[in-house]
Amino acid sequence: MSVIPESDLTERRPLTRGDAKTLLLAALGGALEFYDFVIFAYFAKTLGHLFFPPGTSDWLAQLQAFGIFAVGYLARPIGGLVMAHFGDRVGRKRMFTLSVFLMAVPTLLIGALPTYGTIGVFAPVLLTLLRIVQGIAIGGEVPGAWVFVAEHVPRHRIGLACASLSCGLTVGILIGSLVAAAMNAYLSEAAMLAYGWRIAFVLGGVFGFFAVYLRRWLSETPVFTRLREREQLTTELPAWVVLRDHLPGVALSMIVTWVLTAAIVVVILMTPTLMQTAFHVAPDRAFASGSLAAFALCVGCLLGGLLVDWQGKARAMLVASIGLGVSTYALYVDLKSGGALLFALYPLAGLFAGVAGIVPSVLVASFPAAIRFSGISLSYNVAYAICGAATPVVVGYLAKTAGGLGPAHYVALVSLVGVASAIYMLRSRRWFGA
Image 1: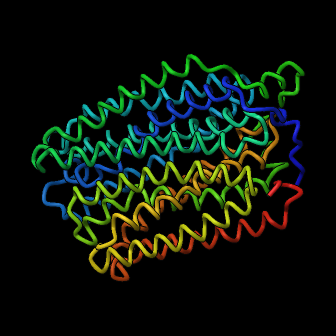
Image 2: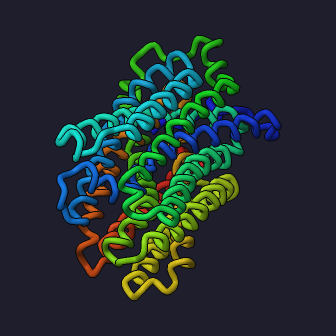
């Protein structure tokens, strides 16, 4: 594997007010866009009953809705590869703005969709198509955002920069959780089915267009500008260069992305719904605890980034992976016994899900600047397409097994993969600066 030269990243200098402004605007825009992508998960049970034939059982309706949710992950590589190609050839900022626009439009349209009771089978078909467009948008957004912030800040603050962006994305999850919790607390089940779910998606569309406006104030990254001025941009197909010259970096990036998917999809997005169906937790209690976990996730991302800059990517990955597996097991064992410690254990699991703030630093360090967007996009989106698409369906099924502990078994397995990746990085310090 080739060494990633430090000159590919920004110089070693103090963090400036301009850097802080860039990080804040990027994180805020990412939060608003990610809300659009994840709000679907929080209303999976409602959507399952509205967009599939009447009389479908709760469990099957939820599984079908999670299936459509998973389709968004399958579409991610398409948007990711196309946007990354142009991001490596014409600039990071343009793709950064396009992705959020592509997310806002389908989210708004989902809020206006007729249901199965109105147009029959066309309802789930249209919902699936709009979910695909959302997947295309997020496929370009997340890798592009990490590259954008990493190439704006001093290289010894890349952990914090990537983590702050990840924190922004998780704030989007927190907003979604709070919206779901508030609506379940103040609206009856009948009102939720009639119009409540639409409010959440229309609100997301408005958020998305506001994020487009925010990104007008961002500038192109210094790293890309320098590459363009020196005529060092790749003349080959960036994705081909990644596959030809950087397969070890691709493999490691895909593995750590799997850990990220388990933390976000299972622990944060699916657990509030699984609580209700597998453990019969009341919706208001499930979403309230989920909101606390989402807030803890935001804090965990920032702490993970600081740990990367202080102790390196490998040690940070090791700590977070072990904590993720142990805390998730503790949460599900408590749920099985009645959930007495739910409001303590779920935030703890959310804190260790902050591994999501560590993973991007590994991805950024795995590829040189000229093909960095394409390298991260290819690795991250293909891994997320496989793991993210399979996880909701597999975990939804596992929730019916092992006395409800199936999801915890899955997270524990993936956490061990995270530990193995950390050990690999510790033995490969000359390549990854672990």
